[in-house]
Image (cartoon, rainbow, N blue to C red):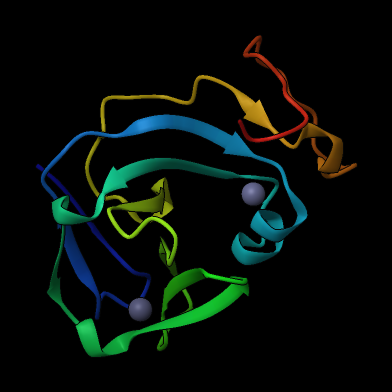
Length: 131
Ligand SMILES: [Zn+2]
Ligand SMILES: [Zn+2]
């Protein structure tokens, strides 16, 4: 069981299952959403996500048609992404975890959009797209 919370702590959640396809996404949307060099994210099963507290604070921004970025409306922390086309899974960025998920990224994607001020210094595969 993993646990996490947003910056202001109003939203608290648990994830009861595993993490698939852990990767670092360097696309410009992830960089802007997280105000960071890249977003480390995984895919999780929607049924494994449980909001323990603060459900009413979670608001959604439709970043692409059918793709909704869930965030804390109080502090702005990015919490998860839900997909109209595939409601069984969520995109989950690791930044708000309070526990060790015991998995690490296995690749970089959208490296063509990488921030000019950031250097990738590991030996993980670098890909131009998400596939
Ligand atoms: Zn918050
Ligand atoms: Zn991205």
